[in-house]
Length: 448
Image (tube, rainbow, N blue to C red; front, side, top):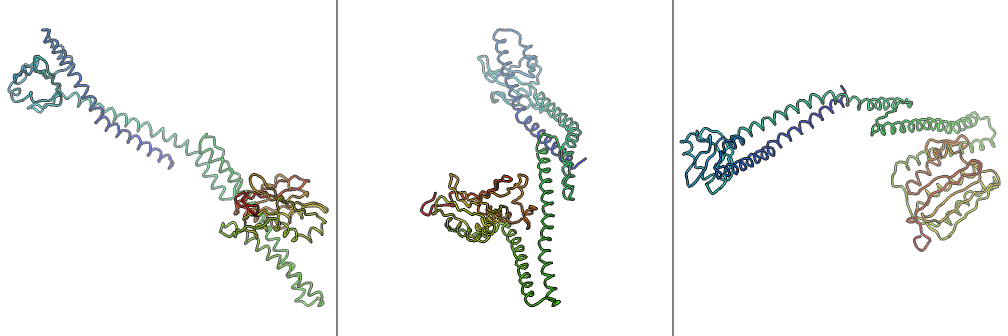
C-alpha cells in the first residue's frame, strides 16, 4: 500500500471520527433537549385531556396508559389526591414531598432515587401534576449512541478498502509522473506521461511533457553552444599558436613578423570580445541593477549609429535610411545598452542583406508609445527559427559566431521593460523592433 493511500485512509478515518464526535455531542445536547421538550408537551396534552375527562365525569385511565403516566396527582389547598394507578403509590413518600413547591415542569427524584419528568398545570379543580419515568429518555440516548457507534464502525470497515482502491487509482498516474520525472533527470526525454484523469493530475502531466520538450530543446542548444564556443575559441587559438611558432622558429622575414604579430593581436581581440559577450550575457541574466537611465535624443542617437556603420554600408553599397517623425523625441533608457541593441539589429541587417540593399532605421509614434525598428530587404528568417533566435544557445548555420548577440539584446530590452519582437518573411527581409511606452518617452517638452 502506497504512502498516499495510507494518508488518505488516515484522513478519511479522521474525518469520520470528527463527524462522529460532533454527532455524539449534538445528540447529547440538542437531541436530549428536543426529546425532553417533546415529553413535556405530551404531559401537557395528557394533563388537558385528564382535566376534560374529570370535568365530564368520564374515565381517564386510558389516557394515563396512553401517555405512559407513572404517577398523577391533584394538588388542591395542600391536599394531595392521587390519580388512577398512582393510588397504589407509597403514601408516606407522598407526604414527605412538597409538590406544591414544584415549578411548571422539570425533573423530580423520589426517595428511591427514581427520576421522573413532571408537568404541573393549573385548573379550577386544582393543580394537575403528572409524572413520567425518565428512563425512556435515557434509553433513547443510549439507543442513539449505539446506532452512531455502529454507523462509525461500519463506515470505518467499509471505507478502508474503498479508500485503498481510490488511493491506488489516484497514485497510479502520480507514480507514472514520478517515473517520468526521474527519466528526465537521466536525460531520457522520450517519456510516457499520457494521463486521462480529467483533473489537475492530467494538467500536471501536460505541463511535465511541455517541460520535457523544453528541457530537451535547451539541452540540445546547450550542447551546440559548447560546440560553438569550442569552435570559436579553437580557430583564433590555432592561428595564435601557428603564428607564434613561426615567429619563435625565426623563419619569417622582419616585415612578415609584424603582419603575424598584427594577426595575433586581432585574434586576441576576437577572443576578448567573445569572452566579454559571455560575461555580459551572464551579468544581464543575473538581474542586477546595472541600467543607468537618462533622457537622450533619438535623432542624435540614430545619427551616431549610422556613422558607426559608414564603412560597412559603403563596402556592400547598402543604403541606411533614417526615418524619424519628430526630431525632438527623447526616451528614458540606458543609452549605452540600447546602443548595443540597435547596433546588433543593424549589424545583422547588413550581414543578411544583399549588395545594393536598403536598411531602414525608424522611429514611429503610436498610441502605445514609440516603436523603434530596423528593417531590411535581405534573405529573411524561416518561421521555424523565429522563436529561437532570442535564445542564448541558438546559432543559425548561416550566421556564424555563437549566436548570443540577440540573447544579449533580449536581456537588455527585458531589463528596460520594453516589448520586442521580429517580423520576417523568407526572401523579403526582416524587421526587428522594440516598443518604448509613453511613460519612458517625451517630445523634448512634454510627455507624449
